[in-house]
Length: 165
Ligand code: PH2
Ligand code: MG
Ligand code: MG
Image (tube, rainbow, N blue to C red; front, top):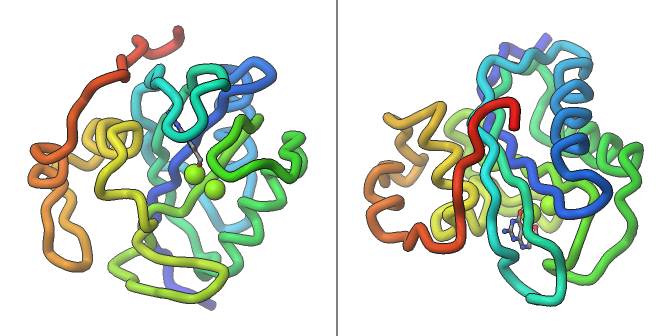
């Protein structure tokens, strides 16, 4: 039996009622075997990064405790994405739900299927700001602090929605 790990999951949606998609994804995360959701950030409204001819996104980050290994967790997230109607899509294009493993304990991994920490973590305000809601003291495996990453990332094009909005 694996020991419990702490992981941070990035959630993003800009299709088919994004607020409902995030809600459903959190329910689906909490229902994974040997997994509990221990914290959820505020929800943020953010301008699309990448192609501009797509709707604005809702983004959030969830903290989970899980006994699933990193690859098992990745497969489980992909399964949730498919159940929520995710289609094969253009890179950085619109999607019903995107669930990314941002961090998995202090693990550093670079495989074709999974890169940890998530490659884009350190320069996306729609990841760093919600992460800061639930883990302001966070330190990455390479010793950089979340605070230092935030200080170097413009917070344009993003606004927090009050919880429940
Ligand atoms: N996800 C993408 C591409 N662009 N833009 C915003 N604002 N939020 C996202 O989650 C996002 C994006 C691909 O993962
Ligand atoms: Mg993804
Ligand atoms: Mg993504």
